[in-house]
Length: 271
Image 1 (cartoon, rainbow, N blue to C red):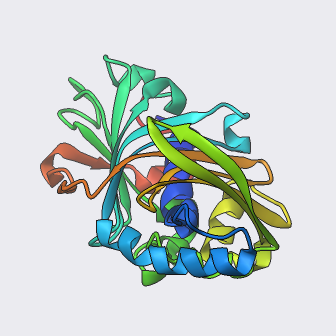
Image 2: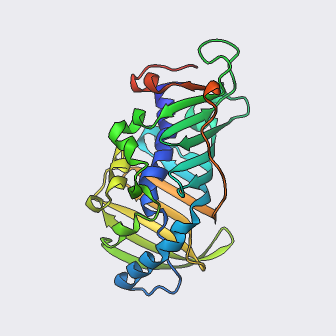
């Protein structure tokens, strides 16, 4: 695994956890009026219920310059109830890690600011018997950026604060998403009002004066789909369900090889 390969997977997850999470809970009720002022008030009120859910089963697709516009996909559970955590399945080809897994799929976990990639245990060499590769988020975001991932500002409802600066909020129309009746809303937010999310998108190659968010909200006031674009970085999240009870734990240390320093130094890790 080379540093660039790991960084792609890390970056895709960071868009969700450190960047997109800022607007994830942009849930609104279908009864919201068309005026931006009334809509923002409805968004703020609905954020409490979204926050209480604590977790969601999601399907995500991220594109960024480092992937040459090729989508990176993740399917799994995203949790914010007790610190940021995620467990997702990713195609090995998206990470260029085909040589490390036989079945073509990599299991990725995010736990306490570190990412773990499930691989087939190597019969010999530095990874002998190891079934997980650990990479601290600091290898991509730096120490300050990694530390910010576990602050209260990364609660998925925190992004509702940025919506009050939206230059415009519009109701696009009614649509069906994943079998649910939804209302489609669109908002644009100035980049200088995005807080931590702006830094995360910027680190991935996003550069624009504003973030465009399309949000589909079901009749229970919960997001069903979220699409965001910030320059060359794009992200789409399908929220399949909320309140998924799942304990996402770090793999046993004895089964884990830490490749953080290799990635930080830009060297080639085990292949």
